[in-house]
Image (cartoon, rainbow, N blue to C red; front, top):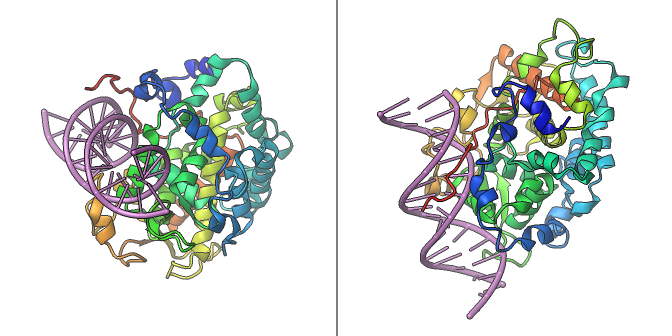
Length: 398
DNA sequence: GTCGCACTAAACACCG
DNA sequence: TCGGTGTTTAGTGCGA
C-alpha cells in the first residue's frame, strides 16, 4: 500500500497534512517555475558545516551529550550530508529508545513497552528512509516530498539546535533543511528567502557576529535566542504532537494488540518515511530542550531536577504560543517583528517564563513520552499536527 | 467576517 | 560586477 493508499483510508482530518493538502499545497513550489538555481541546494548540502563553519564543526558544546550525538547524526551535523546513514539514525533512535524511554518513567512502563523486541522502530523508521527513497515508485515518493509539517521557524530552530555550536550560518541552515526535508531540494529557492525572512524577523533567532575573521558581511551565524528556546521546543512539540495525549493515554488495548492501529500498519509498510524523520528531529528537540533547560547557561533558573516535580521553568502554555512561539510580552506578536527583535535587549529577559504547575509538568513529560512513543512507531492514528501550512496557493498571484 | 499567523515574493542594501 | 546575505514590505491563504 502506498502512502497515498493509506492516507486515503484515513479520514481527512487524520490524514497527514502533506497528504491532505492537495497538489496545491505549496502549489507555487510545485507549479512554479523550476528553481533557477536548482543546483544550489544539492550542492550546498554537502557543505553542511564542513569547512565553511569550523566553529560549528569543532565547537564542542557543553551540551554535547548523547542527545547531541543524536542531533549530529541526524543532521549530519559536522559531517557531510551523505554521511548520515540510516544506520546512524537507527542507532540514535535506539539510543533514544534505550536510554530515554527507560529513564522516563512517568506514566509507567506499560506506556512504552509495546514489546521492545517487536518494536516498530526496528523494522521501520530508519530503514524506511532509504528504502522509500531508493524505491522506484516515484508516485509514492511524492507525498514524502511534500512540505514538512513544520514552519520555517521550527525548521530553523531544529537546524540550529542540532548544530554542535548551537549556531549556524544561513547556508548551513539551508543544508540542514535540505538534508532532512528533501522536499526543499526540489523547491524553488523561494524557501531560502523564507528562511532568511524568518531569521530576520523572528525574534527567536539572533544573529551572532562571526569572530573568525569574518565580520558582519556575509555569513553571520544565527542562533536561537535562549529565551525562546523552550518556547520553540514547545512549539515544535505542539505542532507535531498536538494531541499527544490521545495516544499517550494507555489505550484499552495495547497498540501492538490484535487490532493494530493505522499507524502501525503504516510503519510496517515503511511508509512513514517523512514522519519518522520528523519524529527523530522532534523527539530530539523535545529531549534536548528538556536537557538543555538543565544545562542552558543562559537559564538563570538553575538546573532542573526532573525527579523533583515541583517547579520547572518552562514556557508558558498560553494557547497563543501554540502558534506563536515568538510570542512574548514586550514586542508585538505580529508576524513581522522586525526591529522589535533587534531593539529587544539580547539575553535572558525575565518575565517571559512561567512556572508550570505540577500538572503542567506532568503534561509536558507525558508529551515527551508520547513523542518517544511516536518515535517508536506508536503513533496516534496519524495525528498530525494541525498543519498551519497553506493548503493551496494560487499559482498565479500576480 | 475578522484577525493573527505562516508563508511567499520581491526589492533593496550591504559586504566580500 | 556578482553572488550571498540580511532587511523590509506587500500580498495571500488558512485556521481560530
